[in-house]
Image (cartoon, rainbow, N blue to C red; front, side, top):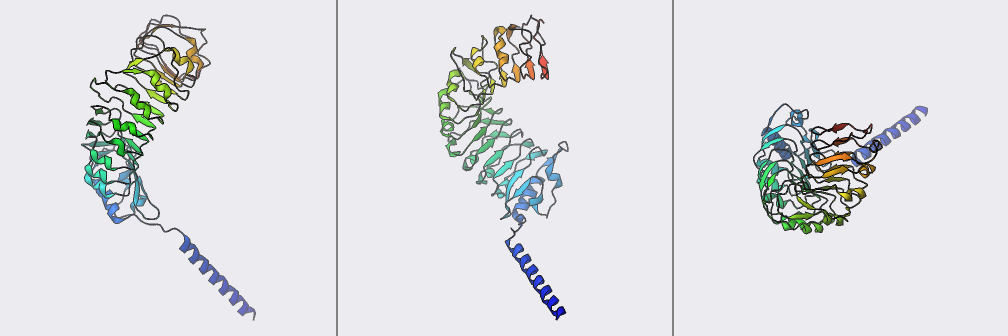
Length: 379
């Protein structure tokens, strides 16, 4: 009887254990391997490039053919379907042309190929990636035009094509990017007018048009007022004949970074920019007097007013802010107001006063200073 009871108890435990295992297995999410067509597309994609062997992050070198591509470096998949949704090969030393097979990865939502050595233009097939929300191709040596096929990517929230060799006009019908938050095409060779459709995208938070060659044409800068959500704006070196009134940007209540370097600037005496502003660059703007409005910008941590014609002395109130980086080089400044220890209580880390006409002894620097340049002066 005792043995029979033990056997019944043991059998019950076994049945419970098996049942529990089956239940857990059935309720656990299935792990899908990537689809073979997408694995083959990725393998073909990496075979198009040669590696320089110089980058420490050459992810494709660790890929193994006929294995689960969801486990490859830089590749992320949807856990339910196994579709490749994220390809991050930033700084992977890929050299060669972008070919057409990237269109086979139609489930991609994020594509990051920044910091590689591509040649030639963006392929038209990139316009087939219609689920893409982020396209990151900065510093990748791309040339050619802004491909109109990209206008098919209506889910895009992020476009970064900065620091390439792209040229020609930006497309006129950019309103198809209705969800765009980040648009960075700075440091290319784009020419022609700024498309008016760009100002119909109120979701924009970052806009960088640095060095867009407007070929001495005029610009209605008031159009930027339609972009009320802007936090970071770079309009430096636009090569335009238009006068830019700095007071225009007092209406951007969320602005934290503004770069207007290389433009013809007008500064009113009563100017007050938004209080969130932390970074301001006004280099090469033909400024002749030290901007008094800076006295009210108490949240500034970065200031560049270099390469102007500012004369006179540096006011002591400048150091009462939170400034960490200050570049006042290449002006006609002669001295510093205030006591010798006026700067010592500031959090200053970088100061460039080179190429001026300073004659006074320089005030004592704070211990936080990491870089200081005073070359080409009379100190």
